[in-house]
Image 1: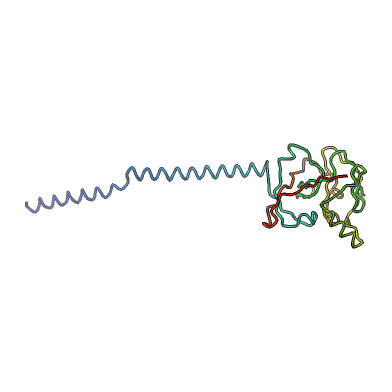
Image 2: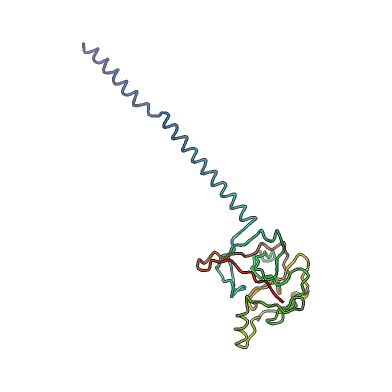
Length: 225
């Protein structure tokens, strides 16, 4: 074998080796790339569905609400976080004693109060006595607070009576409710802003999820008289 032939054989071997080394992408890599693409698409679909579900739930079913201010003490305090049931009042009207969240257009914010009167009720508030249709209402949700104030020779309700100079009508009109805060001496409510349109009622406060040590289902007292 001469040197020229030896060089040609060597070149052919080198080309064969180099050629096999360049062929790095095969069916396995294509399959891996397709699987990665499918996983990305699946994640995008899952995230899109999650976003849609959150939107639907918050718009039509439930939404969070943060308590601000002392108007519902001693039952609710600033910073507590609640779940508001937005569906229930699309099925039926608010009932006496339920804790509701509603929007106040004139102030551009949401209030949390308790339903005292519904359409057709005649409301009267004199000191710590609340009357619905001329019958005194039993209010177990603030009974202890009222008794503590009376033990000190004080009124629990240091706020306005009802009717008053701000709201002179005592009968709850159709499509509206009369709502008051549990902290009667420190609550801006129907005694000040008037009757609340049912169209502005966002929903019923059904559960507390923060703070963690107070996680609970909210009790809605049925008002008796």
